[in-house]
Image (cartoon, rainbow, N blue to C red):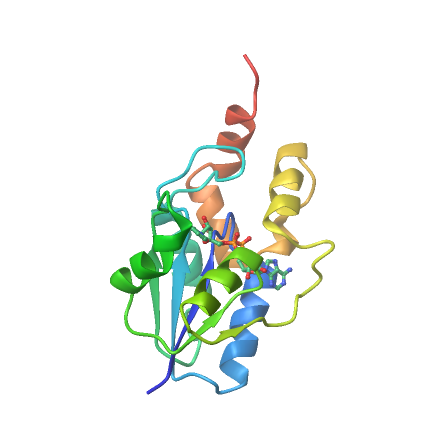
Length: 170
Ligand code: NAD
């Protein structure tokens, strides 16, 4: 049994994240996948508009029918980077391989002796959490950048109105 861990902030979960997960499943490298939702303790700010629970919904609904078992687990940040891998290990099922392209995350898991794979980027110039949030704020079209299930969750929680409200300066 081989289990992979894919960590991200997923603010919001977008088509780039989805394509990484699909490519992990298609390579048959792992039997199960853990999706770790980082910065689970942060929400309602411009870089982190959505709560951990809202991100759990976005991901769980988008991955319905993925084809392999998966677990979506919120992970609070910790103040000391040197302790973060131990914190993650204490919160998720055992895993053999980590998927990430985030340089700090690559570094921390590599130092801990855990193999790290960096899947290819999908339309990185135009597709990032930052670019999607920017479009949401500007009133530009963002829905084609995320799975349909994510659009539903964001509509349900009035996410665009939230982002626009918290971006106002007083
Ligand atoms: P993210 O949501 O920005 O990205 C998640 C992953 O998807 C990354 O590997 C990223 O490279 C990849 N990705 C993004 N756009 C893509 C695209 N278009 N195509 C393909 N892949 C794409 O999240 P992140 O910033 O990598 O999340 C890391 C999390 O780990 C954060 O929540 C961070 O706080 C947490 N962390 C915490 C500590 C600590 O608490 N001390 C230390 C390290 C990391």
